[in-house]
Length: 353
Image (cartoon, rainbow, N blue to C red):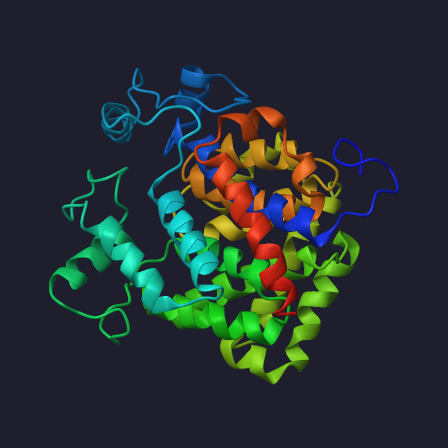
């Protein structure tokens, strides 16, 4: 693919796993420096119309969430660091590699260590979003990780990102659906939100197996014939969500210029049902460029950290690790460890196909 791989090159599953995992973390870190700008004119005034690399948290601005950037800067976060969501993803990786599988109890123990460093407030750790604050409060009350009372009413995309990691581990859609649903139930109460996030994982998974972009939508919708998957997805309509991104291939019908403004079409906020359509659109919009897809996501303002992470995992799975610009890999927090964990996942996933 132009700009990503040499013509005729066949990517290995290992390259796709590395690409997806690093794309997830790169996207998170790219957005962190200019996170939660809801006035895009002010965003462009402060950082320019097109940011191409990691930034230190921007504090000179008058935008509404500048206090979060100021807090993060004081905490020592700099260009290339990832958010608290990235920390949680890293803990999941460590747990999977150590346990050789998804062990929610072992993952919970690691999360407890992180939660012990927080105080339950938003300005805690690297900044604690609502779902983390909810879980922190319930764990303080002694509610166990497997209790029905634990899941949050949050509608953010943490679950989708966690399940993207599982998509690198499980090659069988049935195994992925079971494991992802088990993990999502720890965090989310809403069945529909869990289904949306599960379908995202079911989109990353076939890309890892080498499914082409042209084949992807049909591959996902064909899972409607798998009752074990559908028991967790719930409806055929949910399986159609990733394919809606194909509208990017029809600019004569729908034109968004520049592509970063897709965030305005679907919403600048943190709801996973607004973030996923934008990620699918950008993934289809740039079939030959990991860099353009992920930068369009991060430059779109609002919840750009999550949008870029979700886009990065998709584009990384499609294009492989060698499509990720070296400047992103060189400066990424724990980049070497993340890559080594990706390499450790490859043999584990081969055993779970």
